[in-house]
Image (cartoon, rainbow, N blue to C red):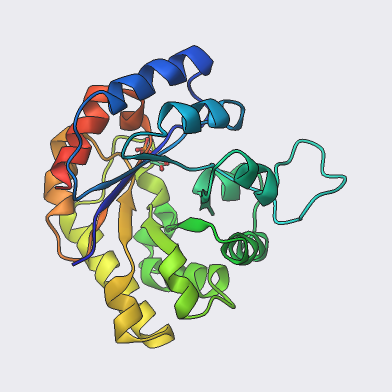
Length: 250
Ligand code: PGA
């Protein structure tokens, strides 16, 4: 059985005191032991978040990283810097990184490869645009994002990868993929993994759904056989909502 993961992508929200207060709410309750809980706060509060969560079931991830080891990259953060403060998980390929900051499949692939090499767990995001869903190319688009983003990742290294299917039209819009639409795509992703790697890899990789997951729809989404939890944006900023979603993954 795959252990479900519920990960909160805080995006550019929560300053230091807000981070401490949200994390104290998350760490003061007992979480279901069979769900992995991850939060991804902003870079400036990561070290504080690592310290606040150190004796808890809540793990901390970064929202991005630079693939280079070091050097003249103004405003960027390296894998080694993250490791030095105890962070060893990173979200890569989020649609906001792709669409707003111009990250291509190639840039993301380099980040994926370097992160895996450095021992990180990668939460790799991908998903189609609304126009691609409408013209029926969504399966093809997702396959292409997977083959480009995971290029060079070995079957063994796939144990360090968590996939997050996030249809762009459902992110922050309040419009969620129906449980049937999500399950259909997750089954497609698993069959992609089976072809690209093996049935064993396909059955072991956690595939999260993301895009307007809320307490009210989480259970129906997570009940599907190929949906192994969620990547949560807006609803991860409110402790009671996030905790309800974690409970729905149990
Ligand atoms: P949302 O964001 O839950 O606010 O739609 C999800 C995400 O971007 O990861």
